[in-house]
Image 1 (cartoon, rainbow, N blue to C red):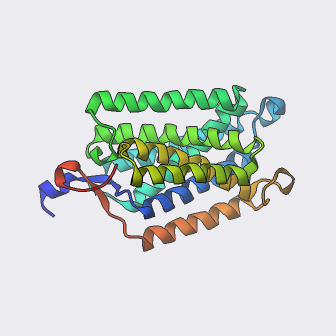
Image 2 (cartoon, rainbow, N blue to C red):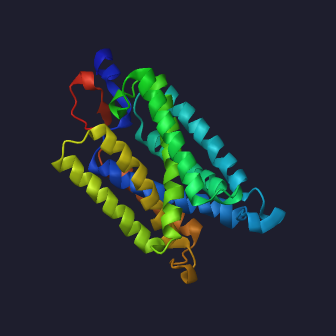
Length: 270
């Protein structure tokens, strides 16, 4: 591949069906993995828990946040698309999003509505800053450190927002199973809009990207929450291990190719 062609490729994967399947599994792993650390290992933090459980979510956020920073730094420094590095960074962003959202909605006591509103504002501000700086928020434009920085900041905020939304719906009358069906139905509507309407594909991509996170959150909670709360009461570490193995298998089995920059004549929708 010559220099011009190499420069036309992004360091994020092409948006395909395989991309969405792995993304949903990664967000589910983020929920079970984040809960395994912040709840099972460190101890859940809520205002009612008092100092005995204090800082569980905060320490978990620090652990996953540090890992995320290292992986984003490596991703930005990489010279070409590396699927293993990319998906490891996605998993880190979704686990960090899980603990950050729980800290915002539970530890500091602003609730699901307050946490979701705050995080939605951060997602929109990130997208606005990205657009004003580059003129586009398409993932097909992610070809330089500047665009990559905006990309990963936006993704981390969207993962955190998705966790708050998923927990909000799951703790309502929907429950975990109903919440998963609810967000699955919303994603089906986005897919229908992609194929049968003229709505902008960039907008639909970001809506779908955000919605896959609460879908994964509700599925993850359904797997590991107690039977009395409507879950299956599976071991969080075991569920996380199974999900991680499934992701590794799919990254190996599903062809992984970088997205193309619009100037290279690619046809990626986002």
